[in-house]
Length: 344
Image 1 (tube, helix red, strand yellow):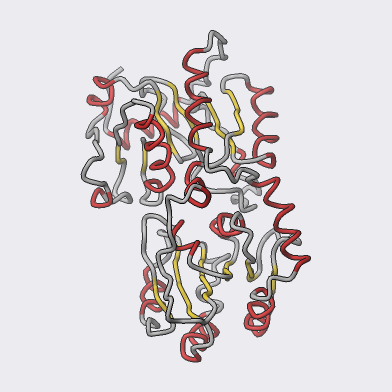
Image 2 (cartoon, one colour):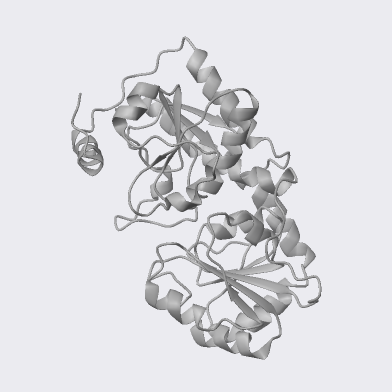
């Protein structure tokens, strides 16, 4: 399990559980300063160097990332770090559908992810694509996760506020005064959770709002948090798509791709009314969410991890020959430099 962010623990642990249940072995490699080893569980084993990885010789490496060192042994399997939120890079391109010559297998989340990657597979030929569903969402459906912030003595609706870290897209600075007002009025229970790359200034300002009505949450597993809320207030963060999979409404502020499965507003004075409306779970909105989820992530059986492992094993035992990956000297040099690994 190759990770470089704390949220990757929750993405890969359901897959780890499935591998162990089938008699396999799992070890973790933590890359960089953005991943905290304190989140490792006592029974989780690690590899501390590329030399140790080579000695252990894994059959496959799973990564919720855009790229991975191709000099690792075994097959490289992409399981994604989130859904496609429609964000574009500075060149106007969608990075979610950009391949970088690193992976042998892409395990896609649903039809709207599978179709673009299948087209790339046919064009490039050096990787396979299998639609499996997304492992971290198994917890929604298999009963292995419970809401983390439920207060049985409090009958108020619970609103989860999430934001991306991008200055251009984040609601954190734009809706601060509104959210401060909500925290003081006590109309709803508020849970606030930000992207780990959010500017510390805004993390501190929102933490300072904490009271009996607002709780600021920092966690390596957002699934129990998502289960705790009735409605989400968000911007263009991909976490809103994880919330939608529960078939719960999302109010967005200036979303970059506002479609009919979202309640998008562009006037900050309309936030309260939009949340009130979302809390009624209007039938047309609920139907639109269901239709969207059938394209995004239709799997509600809690078995996406099983499908990822099955697809990986099929690749390992297949006689099919894929084309050679592109050499990508610059990207691989940067990875070797970052990992301080120069053996060949």
